[in-house]
Length: 264
Image (cartoon, rainbow, N blue to C red):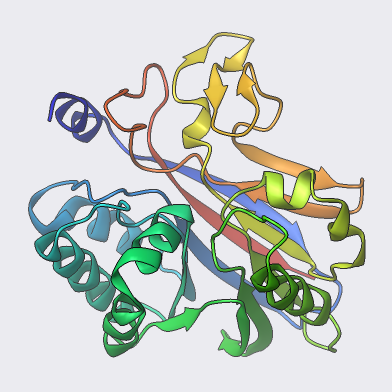
């Protein structure tokens, strides 16, 4: 695959963020990866694994689309093998993206069972109490679907309303940032930090202008990658991801992982 070869020849960028959380006692260092789409950086993703390891994370958050909606059994196995290796570095919290959501709709829920067997915490319209570097945090995730007015939306929205109702700081993974930024229901959601992916950093990037296109906003999006604010109140980090978009390669757009340093 041409675009896979192009992307894998690029060095992965490590993007650092510092996010204050008043509820936190101490510090926590998270690594967030997103949108691998079955691609590989080195044999068995050894280069990606090494890079994550070098960041010395207290926890690793997978923000969706590790596979594609048409992933083969072999590709699913390679993905779960990578996740299992990552659990050796730090606790892993796994959220699904729209590609996993489509995969699950066709193939059933066995993918999540396989991920759970790696030792990762599967977050699927649910949250977990996480002990990270001596801190207790709530980490939850939406199920990665497009919101469509279905009954499932009610389950997702209920989780996002409940996650921040705690003395512990809370992080919600919502793979598609438009589901937070443009969804009117978000006014009642309570997370202290949102993590997203899905945009592929705008796919192509131009000087000054930034990203050229994202799936939700189309041409010249405002929200392509980086740190933004929801209602001038809650931070949202959009991970630029690790893969191209189908057969469209990234141009002037290095793949990335995010390192999120949380402090008081």
